[in-house]
Length: 210
Image (cartoon, rainbow, N blue to C red; front, side, top):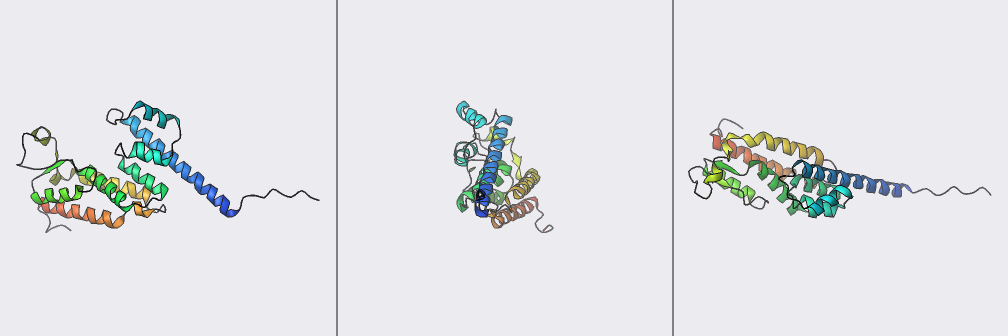
């Protein structure tokens, strides 16, 4: 009798293996990204030598990457990439990360307009940047005068192109990858629209621009 051919993996089994390998590659890519950020900003990124050695020399699992590196180092974008890779739909965490990303491009800042201050205080509530300063011009005190001069003026709009580029970049990486909940369109659009209107109002252009 002819020897039987060895039984190959089924189609389902192959798909499972391919999905597993794909996820492992995604996780390794995230680890490389974290390591690159740490190495390029060593002076400003607080990390102990043991953790640095660990991420440099061994392949870590996604839980360790999130809990030991991305979250404590305030790498909000990377946190979203991890949630996207794991298909982890935790709406409150995702909203917090997005609030933090948006606030990171704007705060700390100063403004001439009390309504701007109120809007930004509401925006940062629930983010990881609640301690960042929003100073109303004319309300400087001896406590904040040392940082006041260096603060960006919201009305100048220096933050607009940075924020736009960051959101677009994240959209390309997160949206359409099977975990669109990590790019919550309604929340992002509502928040950016609110910022746009607030900026126009603060610049005195609310009636002329849409």
